[in-house]
Length: 474
Image 1: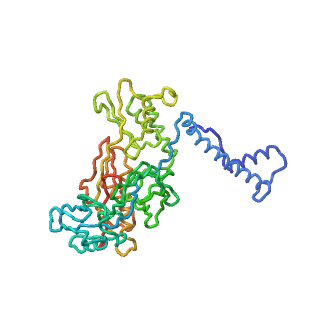
Image 2: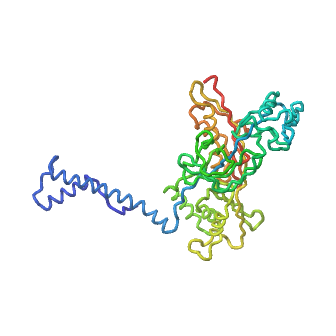
Image 3: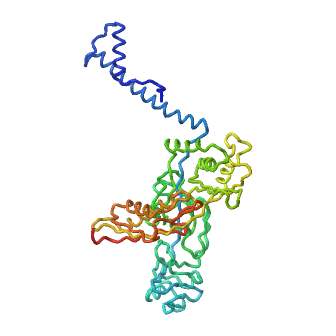
C-alpha cells in the first residue's frame, strides 16, 4: 500500500534540521554531542517523530472504521451471560433411599407417612402420626430403618400432621435443596409462590436478573428459572455454585416472602465483550462475499449481523420444496418476539426504512424462522487428583463441571460435542487434575445436526456428573 502520510524517524528529522540550518548559514554550527543546539533539535525531532507515527497509525486505523460506519456496518455489542438460578426455601427435612429397589415413592396423608418400593417391597414403611406425632420423632423412625436416611433441617417439634400431602413422590434421583441426593419434605403452609421476571441477585457487585416469570410450586423446595447478567461481558461467565447465598456467595436484592436462598447449580455462559476490530474485519469480508440477496450465504450473513445472534443455519427446501427453514441461535434456545421482528425486517425488508432494511429474501421462496432443537447432553467424568496437594475435591469437581458446561453451552449451531475437547478443558480447569476419563458417552463425539444446539446443566435435561478420586501412583 502506498504511504498516505510520510513520517520520519527522529534521526532523519535531526539530519533535516541540521542541513536546513547549515544551508541558511545562520551561524549555528556546533552540532556536537552536549551542545545546546543539538539538544534542542534532538528533543524536537523525537517529539515530532512520535506524534507523526502515532498520527499515521490513527489514520490507518480510522480508514476501515470510517468505511464500516459509513456503510452502517456497526460493531457488534457485548452480550450478557445467561444461565439458570435456583430459588429455594428450606424443607422441614429430606429423605434418602439407598436400597436395591428400582423405585421408592412417598405418600403423605393427614394421618400417615408411607412409602412403596418397587423391586424391594420389604423396604417399604408406613408410620402413623398418632404414634409419631412430631417431625422429630418421625425423622428418627425413618432414619433408623435399613436403606433409608432422614435428615432434619428445621424445628423437630413441628406436628407431623402439618406436613404437605404428597402422592407417589419419587425419592430415587431426587435432588434436595442443597442440590445433592434427597427428596425434600415441606409443610402444608409452603404454598405456591409466583416469581416475577426481574428477580434480582448480586454477586461481586454484578446484578443477575431472572429473564422470565417462574413458579415455586406448593410442596416443592426449588424453582429453576432462566436468568441473565445485567452487565454484558465475559465477567458474567461464572462457575457452577458461584452464587450460593446460603454460604455468603452473593445476596438477594428482591424480597419475596418464602424465597430464602438462591444458587446457580450450573455455570453461566455466552457473555462476550464488544466485537474486536479483527472480528469485525472478518465479518465484513464475509458480508461482502455474500452480498447477493436471496442466496443462502447472503441471508445467513445478514442475520448474523443482528446484535445477540450467536449463529445461523439454513435447511433449504425444508420442510417442503420451495420453503427454506432458517435456524437462529441466540444462546437461550428460544427466539424472543423482539428478535423475531428484527430478523423478519432483515429478511423481508421494511417498507418504511428500505435504506437500512432492503430485504434479503428470494422472490417466490417461503421462509420459516425457528429456534434450534435443543439436544440435552449428558456427560459422565471420572477425574483423578494429585495426592498431597491441598486442594479440596469439591473445588476440583466444580471447576471441571464449569469448564465442560461452558464448552458445551457455547458450541455453535450444528457443532458436534467432541470427547477430546471435554478431556482438554476438564484437565485444564484445575492444576490438581492428574487424569480425566469420559465414562459417558462411549463414542468420540456427540453428533449435533445442522438444526440442533447442544445444551447441558441446570434448566436442561442434560447433566455433567463428575467423580473425583485420589491418584495412588503418579
